Length: 219
Ligand SMILES: *Cc1c(COP(=O)(O)O)cnc(C)c1O
Image (cartoon, rainbow, N blue to C red; front, side):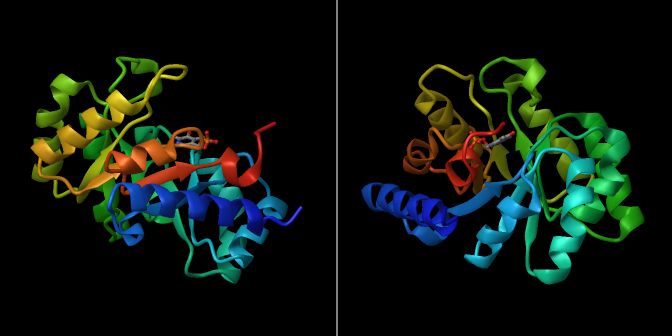
């Protein structure tokens, strides 16, 4: 199969959703979520020009990406999964954006890691919009306090991220995240996955995290 075809299809759908929403497609960044995928699946996307990739585990990304990055130095790697505080330093060395800042202890760990590594990584604060704490994400009620703590610690927070509950209409959650971002003066909205990225774009997504629509179903 030609791996460029699913990528073209996703681009077409992104553009179509942008047209309906009267948005500029340049405002929407496609994060190709390559978790569980090997080089054989990732290389064709790199060859087709995709440069932003998402991983959900620090160790898996460490094993896969250094060699790919030698060949494609302009790749941007995003961490889209939960981050343990004791992996903050490794994450700061490896990733160019973190989508899962969700608690005060991680604010401290990241601030420390930024200092130590000498590099700041832009972050999204993940919000638990569906009241499913097992997925990670800061409770809606705690968001203002967490944002204040991040500001205090000089963490560059560029937006909010959510993973709505599975199996129900995601649009109300996307609309809610968009409102929370606006209320807090944040530009970025990381929302939308393979099944719902067009809806997310119509409701303001600036980063869509798409895996299986690009790579096929995960084993
Ligand atoms: C796996 C994952 C995605 C991509 O999911 P698909 O349904 O395969 O597009 C997006 N966001 C997060 C946080 C993920 O863990």
